[in-house]
Length: 453
Image (cartoon, rainbow, N blue to C red; front, side):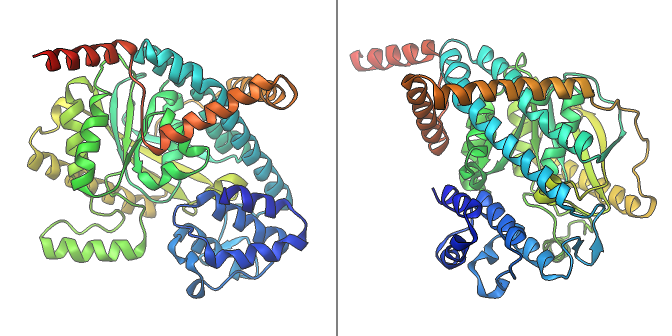
């Protein structure tokens, strides 16, 4: 409700704008990414001086802090004393705003109309059939993002390292440079036929994002608290549902547990030195328990582990940089393919393997700073303009149709949307996934059998 409230205020007349400022101190922004985005656009729109960071409760959100720092300068083009790759012109601002509105509206309509069929109806009979349908439908929507990056923003995506085959079942580990690293993995997944099958292990607070949180739940992303005593059971339970070797899967994890900052790096170096562990400069020391849990549960069904190292030119982008197309100029992804059977099974040896892998990443990133590229560049094809336009056309067509049905057709469509929203909100809030009817019947039979005994 707060996100909607601030959205309405943003698009209202300037007379309503002071109310937005007055309400800021009473709002918890810890989990309010969409709200912070609206506020950022608000400052752009009205050319106001931002609230001082030390005097505002918004200091909890580093995403918003970085924006405030950008706005303190004389020009919105600058960030951390370095020029962005492209200036934020009125055209880019308007184009980015339109893209964001299109992405959010299409995501909402696809979720509320397809979820009852693909996630509720089909899943009651076959989980595999449901997953294939969800993968196909939402794969079309996810394809809009690589199209934005590469076709509209003209960001060059450069691949290097091992050439990987199509359609493998893999565990993917990556370094975490910025808040949008995970989005660029879609560019790789799209080229390998796995865009709709990629799942992430992410912090639970992201599930509270309006619309996006629903999508994360439908795509079966695994939400964790980043406390092992809580996450161990969650991981094993969720991973056990992904063991079927016939189900396509790319499971992506960021073992560092958070995105890279100089302060975190400094603290990590101090801890590593005290613990006798390798001191890393360009990455954080990885957390090993979650990685081992993934291997332990999925090992028998995985083809390989992809070790992906991500680097940016000329600046690590924020979400807004991506939306408005001001950064980055290039994204470099270096991939190492390691067959699953080559990774040690024991927790101690797997932990050592992961730490050694991050030492390799650290060296790769050091060399990247000097040379400007990773070794062994690959000649991956550019994404098809025709397929990008086709995906866009299909998604926009269905969104237009669903919008018409919702607002200008029978009452029953409004009821359908309302019930769908209720299901999505409750299922996401309580992290609940339906099981096939046969499983419920079997569980009921076993319960009655136990009572009779």
